[in-house]
Length: 72
Image (cartoon, rainbow, N blue to C red; front, side, top):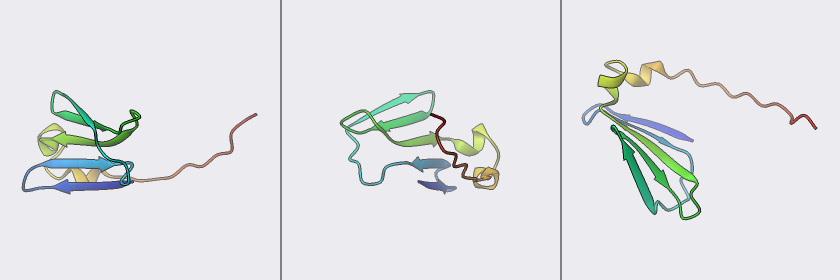
């Protein structure tokens, strides 16, 4: 996963599957979801990210990974 913020264009991109080709995109109120051929989410783009959150949205990132074994 890669998270990028472009302050010049105020766009945040969250990329989940860098190796997948984008074949379809759906936009809803400034949020764009990019899909692969088999409908996996490749990336999510947030337009006007600073206007929707805070002046520098990258400061909001608090990344943690929680790994748990599946309960059988």
